[in-house]
Length: 185
Ligand SMILES: [Mg+2]
Ligand SMILES: [Zn+2]
Image (cartoon, rainbow, N blue to C red; front, top):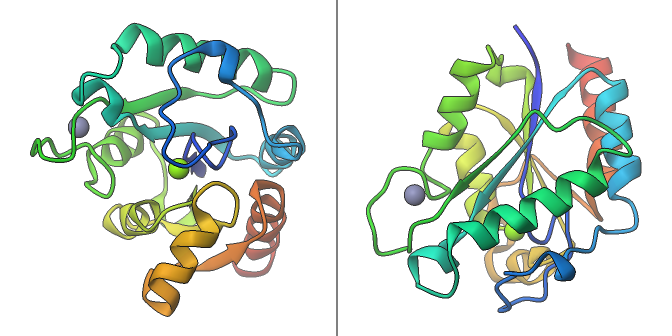
């Protein structure tokens, strides 16, 4: 059984301007600590996945081709630090009952099955409550990062956010996850 990190894309791995739907590869910017974080995940033996809600498709703002162009650019940048196993995204609008829009579990369950992931030893890292609820729905641990929407979400939900841990950014999340595993597993 493998252990994995399921990383949210916007606001966690790449920069997000809240309220702006990223549709062009030219807008892809990693956070300054993202590559360091991926190197740590790799060193600690995690399989790395990106799991993203892209409702801009379902809302008619852009197509799957734009999402995939953004993903390809991101993967090119990330490949300097580590291999990403796969990128999953939900293209549906929030009012479409689809089963894959986080916090719904389908993308996570597909990854667990296909890549033989031990959920209990695995983590979701994201900047929204929907990422934290998603982790719970698939039996993984969670870290909320304070980049992207993280700070606003923390203010909005307080303790109800339910994150296993809150970290400044993805690199501190990686450091935390490395320590948790050394101690407990
Ligand atoms: Mg996000
Ligand atoms: Zn969906």
